[in-house]
Image (cartoon, rainbow, N blue to C red; front, top):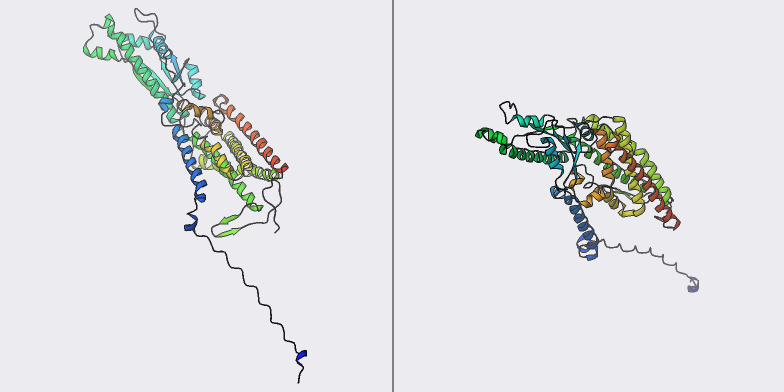
Length: 439
């Protein structure tokens, strides 16, 4: 019989630990009842909608009321002798009465014929009013049996300044010419020499001047009535803005500082240790290289495929690359400085504030003063001046091209200084983006 003291039972096998209960997944219905979840998106969305509405619509709702010092040329080429009892010929009287008005809506510039053509060709004026050399003689002939045709005053337009600006100047000059015709008519009908004129003759003399409209500086038929400069500039800004954000996101994903999600697929690469300064240098270096492709494709699509009127193609390509690059570097600098909200900040800097203050669709002289203030430094205004000069004004330096090049250089330098100053500051303070994790 076996000794019970020597009998040992085998220990019971240890049971496997119970799996931890899975955390219950949140449901949208429950989360919607959290006020804090609503607060920030609601405030930011409402503020963004308010600012966009005020900025965009505020610049166009009342261009006539905001009109101030619209530059229009006025040319007195009249060489006729003064009418009996008058000291000046009619051309001098008309131009003098127009330019001596108290209105500040128009900046009337007294020019010679050659000066007017030069300023039309350089985009310095939106149009011109021209009194011809035989104007007084033609008016005097109306009171005689030798009258052959009604005298004419010519309105010159400048479509290269945009369809709205050119039509606005045309309307103003036509009104001035019509008022001058009525004033001359009062003089003629009151003169003793016309007292015996018949009813038809007196009707003609009451409004004796014909106003003719001509193009003062022609542009091509594939120029969008002068709007291709604006839309091409918008393309450059959007390409620089979106390209920089795509490059930034791609670099962050490749270095493990951001997740990559495509539909249901999600990946997260191992984090590569890199400082903020070196990360910005990498993104800016890639922007320099990739912008060559984007600007080349923009030119090919707009000029070759769509047939847009564009002269000075090599210059246009170089300008397009530098303009797009300046925007891209600026966006990279802002994103590096402001982090997650950098895209929103750069959108306001380059697009939201730039569009209404560009002067490319509505003349700056026809927008409120706030937008004229923005136009002094907003990138889109500077870039559109250069594009307009290349496309419509024979790439003349005094048509805005010099100013555009200067601001491209200033913008590039500011982007480099601001971006690297902020990243070096963050690095010195030890403000790393993420703690690197191993693969």
